[in-house]
Amino acid sequence: MSPLKHISLLCIFFLLTSCTATNSITGQVLVEGNPVENAVVRVQSTKNHTRTDANGKFTLRGIESENPVNITAWAEGYFIGVAQDVTDNAEIHLEAHSTEDNPNYEWVSAFATERQDNCQKCHTDPADESLQLFNEWRDDTHAKSAANSRFISMYNGTDLAGNQSPPTTYGQSTDYGRFPLRPDPEKPYYGPGYKLDFPETDGNCAACHTPAASVNAPYGIDPTTVTGVATEGVTCDFCHKIWDVRLDPVSGLPLANMPGVLSYTILRPPDGHQFFAGPLDDVAPGEDTYSPLQQQSQFCAPCHFGVFWDTVIYNSFGEWLESPYSDPETGQTCQDCHMPPRGATQFAITEAGGLERDPATIFSHKMPGAADAELLQNALTMNVNAHQAEGKVVVEVELINDKTGHHIPTDSPLRQLILLVQVTDENGENLEQIEGSVIPKWGGIGNPNEGYYAGLPGNGHAKILMELWTEISPTGAYWNPTHILSDNRIPAMESDTTTYIFQTSENLETSEVSVEVKLLFRRAFIELMAQKGWDDADILMEEEIIELP
Image 1 (spheres, one colour):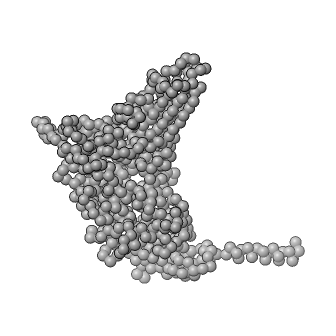
Image 2 (cartoon, helix red, strand yellow; image 1 turned 90 degrees about the vertical axis):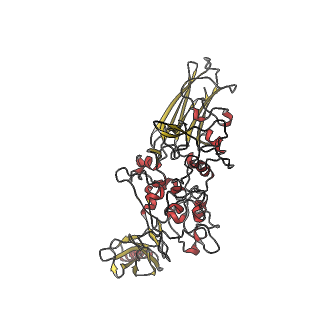
């Protein structure tokens, strides 16, 4: 190679490398003049981070910007600190946050008012469809947990119109003493209610449904009487002050006698201060800190595990814990499925200090659940095989829970799956079922056109409770002593296969039949819905139609 050509290549090399040259920033993290070891130091709103050494010193390399940058630091027990507009050296001072809860703290509303901007003002941008965190929460069931009409009607023992069932009557036994009786069939009945059975107490429903009100009095709050911020249900200010969750070290579950707020450690700040815990370690300046708990399933455990009278009533957290989804290496958290990123690049508007971020770090607050058709339609896989043989139609249905980290259905024992299998001839007439299961009585005895499917070909999946004294089943009155009559819900990564045989013509060449299989999700037993006046429509989860031959 000629000397001239060699020099030219060297020039090109240095030109290219200079274009990608990066800077380094050094510095130190201190608390009251003392170094902080192992603090997380980050170029704000980027993945570029490091940790401090024993002397609190750090070096951040690979900073491509030639402009000044903000450098943040966080360590456990401290608010996130920041050094702004740094070019070569940064000294970051951290301030300890209180570790004591202030029971006199006044909860902050999520809604903007004339006096305060709050969450609504800063966490929703009308001009940016992706930045809708407040709106997502506002439209979610967590925001409506205190005012949910279905919940209120179960608590009070009313229907949606306000008609109330008669108070519970009691019998007397020499062996057992006082015991509840079934509702009088001669009187109008609008379904069960906690207050019908325990009129002198408030119960612990508020521990989950109105947590802001019940933190200071978990067993002394009637959720129908709360006011102010407490009516916002599981509100923003409450969730972002959760600091820890107390779980049984043996089972990993909340203790049976500590539902909702009883299992949470809440940090409400001293007067004149604020405190917010979140999933980002670089939100600064402000009185904010990082909490890894915000991205862990344990965060959800206290309100998604419930034991009444020694019977486990709902247990979606425990179901997740027992499933492969709880494997930290290969699994998924509750937040992964129920708070997935939805494309937002800011979690707060620019005017409020919001910065451009990796969309994978900003989690949706839509939190879809049992009322969300899209979520349910991606909850499991249904496989249908059908064929004709010897004058019969054989239909095999396999339901595989391969997309959900807990049982299907889960949580409220009112929820159920209904599998409908229908085979009709060329005239549209139903073929006679000669083998296979039928939908149980709780599917509703009556007109199928009105959703009463009991006795039809198919199956049902539900957790069925029976009240011990009245033997009412299925029951949603799980505040009374109950036992589990049956439970055939489908656990995570397991399947259920059923086979149905129908009689048809032996002339296989001319006998044309249609096989239709539907899987429905129903939020409550149809008899209870009729009593309460609930009009929640069934949600079609899966459907398949096969034409034979």
